[in-house]
Image (cartoon, rainbow, N blue to C red; front, side, top):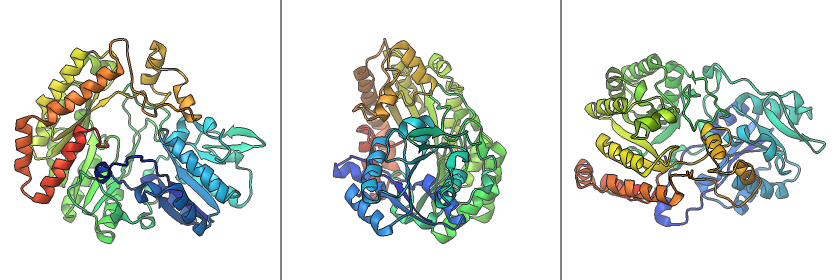
Amino acid sequence: MKVLLIYPHYSKTTNTFFRFLKNKIPPLGLLYIGSALKEKSHEVKIIDAEEKKIDLESLGKLTKNYNPQIIGISTTTPVFKRARETATYLKKILPNVPIIFGGPHLASFPKISLEFKEIDYGIIGEGEITICELVDAIEKKQDPGKIKGIVFRKNNEIIQTESREMIQDLNKISLPAWSLIDIRKYQDIMSKRDAFATMISSRGCPYNCFWCDPEGRFGKKFRARSADNMIKEIDLLYNKYGIREILFYDDTFTVDRQRVIDFCNTIIKQKFDLIWECRTRVNLVDEKLIKLMAKAGCYRIRFGIESGNEKILKFIRKGITKEQARNAIGWCKKYKIEIFTYFMLGLPTETEKTMKETIKFAIELNPDYTTFSPTIAFNRGNDLFKWAAEKGFIEKDYWERFVRGENISPYPQLKTDKLKEDTVRSYSKMAYRKFYLRPSFVLKKLSNYRNIKNLKKYLLIGIAFLFGKIEA
């Protein structure tokens, strides 16, 4: 069958300067889905409307020209409204073409999403196996009720089927179908090289942070591709597409220490001219591992530290200490790996005093880059949202109202009895100024950028941080 996969255009940034700074990240989820469908001999096309910055009318023309038999649309909860508008528009053009929704949103709001009749099916959880079974059932006009992990409408009734088990052996999944996009159109404004791509080498995170979503698409169990499987994809990206920089999108890259060691040793042995960055936790690295990662081309590590107050770290179940953060960042500096840290302001039990502690701790650590994000009460299923709802800091039905179309923010900032939203926002702005406008920090950065092009890029990134325009 002819299947069209769409990543909707959701960005509303009109300022030319900030549009220039916006990251363009490959739609990895759709590339995996496309690969699974191609393996089953279906014809697949991907339209990344966000990358192309096309409106609904232009998307409609491209869709009609392709004349698909099935349309799939990927969405997260914050952009669900835009995805639904896309489905509504396309349904008017091709009323008889089934529309399937997938992505993280469906794990949290399967039945509510199907209340909108322009959406015919929803895929809940990992989609590689499910999409192939569903497309096969549609093609053969079979009852989809026996397919695990979907939601659909039958005789005006919304039916959710039995949950599908997570894919245990990620090595059996086909590599992303990179041929379905023009990889050179994508960029990360913080990357060092122009030939850039993203990879995900594991799924699931075994930790239990307060804001973690237990209904998330990848679940709590850590599952990882082998080092050999990772090298297989890198070899493809490196030799076929000329990629020289990889951003690993794993939640926690170094959970399996030996896997990382095997990966690094292979990269070194095969002499790839490749640099890469990853995300992990400060309690999952040691000096020996950091040294090896640096030798294998790792040039930046992103750590979620969240707070500079030990009591808050315990309350949010982060599972780290400030001393572990100091050690991890010290090792990165020793082996010349850039550090990107994440901090949250306005966390549960937070006060102005503890926010000042966090800002002070960030300056003490002195990473290369950092963010100070107001705490957002994402997703009704996590403990942060439940805690806030029980305390009366957010309405219990907030996300149901949002998904059903009420005009409320997709980024509800947490407010508490001790802190108002405006107070947290003002501290966030102050934190950026205090961190990035330190004379010692500015002088150090300027001295590191002797190339005019790189210096200009750094200055633009710095401005973007100050205005809160960097996407984490």
